[in-house]
Length: 77
Ligand SMILES: [Zn+2]
Image 1 (cartoon, rainbow, N blue to C red):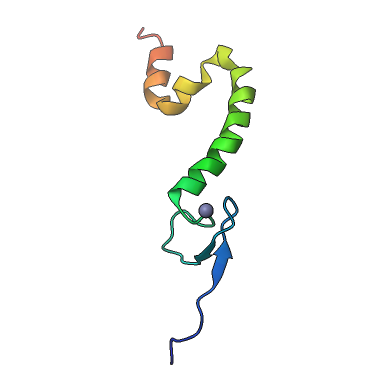
Image 2 (cartoon, rainbow, N blue to C red):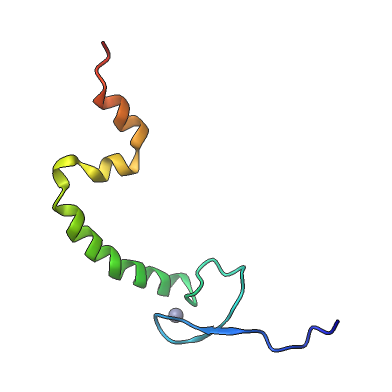
């Protein structure tokens, strides 16, 4: 079994750069962490605006540490 076939490439959705497709690339389909973070930041900014409307529930802190938050909400007696 020869392994000389051209490896598949995918265009990075962020910068359009042709990147060799690899399941070892944790940033796929992006070419790099940088492009991935840019894309995440793009939609995260929109998510933040939505989340800020429900800030009364202190959603952010409960999301980061749900267990300790749960303990704090429960009375000890
Ligand atoms: Zn890219």
